[in-house]
Length: 75
Image (cartoon, rainbow, N blue to C red; front, side):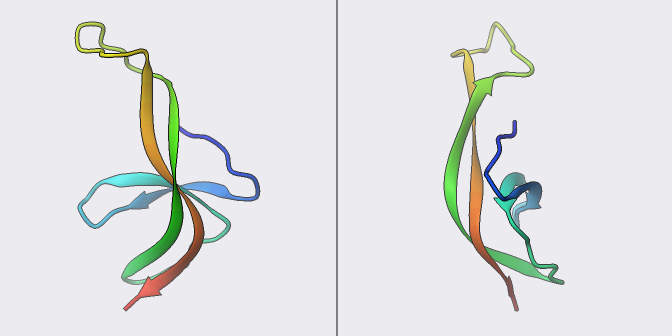
């Protein structure tokens, strides 16, 4: 699920625990190690792409994504 943030591009961002999230940023640094983000959490919602009628609790699906204001390499 994606949205749009004016002046920023969307990217998939790998987390330390192996999960991934969507971030919206002007530019992210290219680092050999970890990247630290300053960001606002966005709640993005819409209909599920894969509805399972038996397990479905409600009509909308929600994801938390990040609107990045600053990013830096962590040593």
